[in-house]
Amino acid sequence: MKIQHPNTIFVPKAYTQAESSKTAHLNPAEHTVKTGKSDSVTLSSTTLQLQKISAAMDVPQENRSERISALKDSITRGEYAIHPEKIAEKVLNSFYI
Image (cartoon, one colour):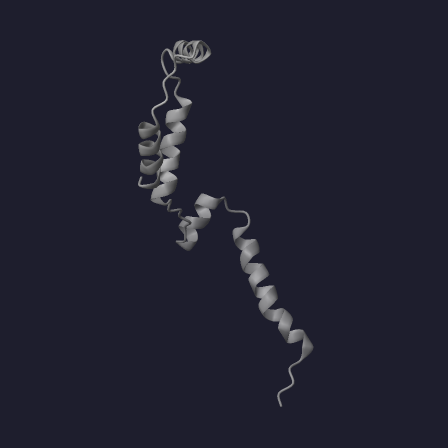
């Protein structure tokens, strides 16, 4: 049975603290140059599509308020036609992007 001195567990800990204090004063760019390490992020295709959709939603559409008021008027007059086939087609297509 090997019994170690209780203070020997602090030596590796002290060494890692000394190393981290050497690089603590460096900004992140200098740190990556010195160590050669860098972080990277890879986005999935779904995330990229969601970003495109979000960006498209932020762009104001021309005549949007006119289109909305025309739709409201046709609904209140009872002239708005609902096409179930078109709705079903769009719902099904949303599953197969």
